[in-house]
Image 1 (cartoon, rainbow over the protein chains, first blue to last red):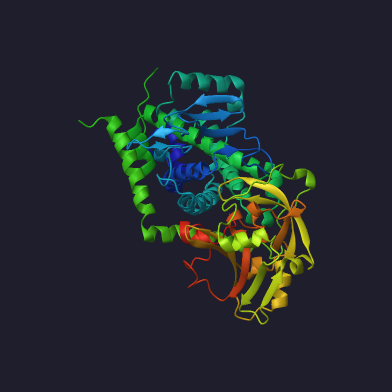
Image 2 (image 1 turned 90 degrees about the horizontal axis):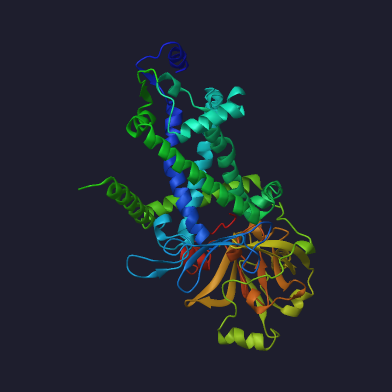
Amino acid sequence: MEADEDKAAAEPPETVTRHRLSTRIWHWLNALTVFVLLMSGLMIFNAHPRLYWGEYGANSDYAWLEIGSTADSGYLRVGSLTLPTTGVLGHRTDWSGTVRRHAFPGWATIPSTYSLAAGRRWHLAFAWVLAIGLIAYWITILANRHWRGLLPHRAELKPRHLWREVADHARLRFPRGAAALAYNTLQKLSYAGILFLVLPVVILTGLTMSPGMNAAWPWLLDLFGGRQSARSIHFICAFLLLGFILVHLVMVALTGPLRQIGAMITGRWKVEKEQGE
Amino acid sequence: MITRRTLIVGGAGALLAGCDRLNSSPAFRDLLRGGEGLTMGAQRLITSRSAMAREYSPAQMSPVFRSNGTSNPDTPDYQRLAAGRFADWRLTVDGLVRRPLSLSLGQIGRMPRRTQITRHDCVEGWSAIGKWTGVPLSLLLDSAGLQGDARYIVFHCADRSGGRPYYESIDLIDAFHPQTILAWALNDRLLPIPNGAPLRLRVERQLGYKHAKYLMRIEARDSLAGLHGGRGGYWEDVGDYEWYAGI
């Protein structure tokens, strides 16, 4: 694989190995695992759709985020800002004409009808898959040196360079041909941010909510500023992850979805002939 | 004609329906339950028997300590005991013990006490910090004398829900933990009825539903099978909640 990449730099061959087997396995495992974790997590959130900062937080304490309902409408409140969300969050009428007052609607949760116990069963089982998969992938990319391709060079972090990449992305002008074989800086930053920041933080904040883990590793509470802060950070990380997935899917759709998905399945990538721009 | 939109919506719908079908499959639920065993094993592996739940300062306490679940058991027996300020209430300790006990609230109050300011974590997600005073469970179990084959301590409660009595159970590791107490006071006042008067369990390294309220009887057993639904607790039987609620 390393040899393929070296050759690609000199003279692009017809097809190259774009994604290693370990990367492909981890990608598709996570496609399933993260989907289950996000949706079962929303079910758990529905049991108490309020977020707090600090160690404690319950109904009589101030919540910085809340999804709720009045007699005939749903709302999302963040701080002092209240947004009407009738039909989606807090209040919706389902296909049978029944009014549902859950924070997140049934189409966004696992299972689709309210069950905190079942949501927890799914979430806590698949959390193991996420955590073991992440650690295994860390070890793998350390061993096969793939991690070096994920960290930006110093020159790539210069504001001018970053700005040019942002501007190119905004104009939907993406690297083609041999230039598309390496990750661009925005890709590196988002992949590294998910791999080394968001995923570990989402796992550790999940553990911080566990009273058993608090006894075993009390430093978790100090690291995140208390159990309710950890719950808030866990929720924010989940939505960062969702945002990453949405942008990721848009980018795949804009850059030849069939070729991209094919490469993530087979690993092979046919290099486009470069034409002078 | 199949449009991209119907494909996406239909695909997502099929995926959701698939999850719901998996959710109602007993074999798949058993697979998910395997996660509970893994979690309990892993937590027990990295946690020493005496590892303590965090204790807080009075300044860190919740302004209001909310209650949850039953707020006032509606059985005639409990109402009669409450009307008499629990003067006629007795806690039975029996099962696999050498010396069964029957203790009044006064007797329990005169036993050595432990006071701890701890965080109560509800399975729903909220937390409240309160100050609990009570007798360490280990003292009671030691004076009753557990028999060699005792593996679980079961807590039988006065409250009922949907016709079923509330009950809970823990293993001996949690039963003999120094912070596991039978609390008769919350925030320096006698335990209020919504919080489980006259006596409730505190098992600080697990979630709130394990902290059985309205205690009537403590039973030492070698197995949880054959007791009510067989899963070791009201919510475990009724709602498929985890018996090990350390996370």
